Length: 263
Image (spheres, rainbow, N blue to C red):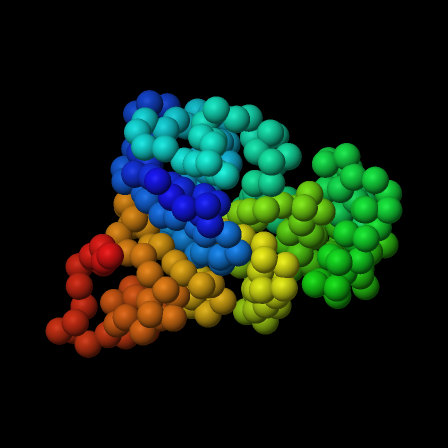
């Protein structure tokens, strides 16, 4: 049984879509309280499906868990509706910078506080906290979200999720389509949140270089299976990780056909 310091357990999860298309067939990892964990892998490795399973969003896309289990705060997520999980503190930022484009940046943020029935004084306090972590949002607070840059929309989506006061923040490909400097700003803010508030963070990323720079630990997925896990600093030094996931060249003698699981 996991200890009290473990907030999320993904135990040998197998999942399909339409009861026919296999997406996951053996994903396992644990996330401890206050930890920043990166879920890595190439496009199609199963990262997004894993996050949807964690938030119990698979049924909305005709997906199902066929084996294994996912526990959040000691309870099985499959027995709780996604909205109930959000209220319990498991909040996901979906891929694609989802925000209300016809509302201002600040109205987007406030909607996150209203969603948890926050009082006006609490919402104002949380707004200031978000602006401290994302100063660019303070500058754009009166601008329609649809008129802001892609990076600002991603920050708005993250900020709105933070207004729900999550205990576990789950992000799907936050770097997608963004310039490197913007990606760095976002990950710096996430790391600052993690370090200063103790917020647990799970991020799925194809950009392994930036994820391993800021995460504490990482799990690598390959074809729907978790094949490698360890401290981010250690994984950054592995030659197979550098070659296959960080885009650096390894010598031919050391290039494996795939990554092997380690304890």
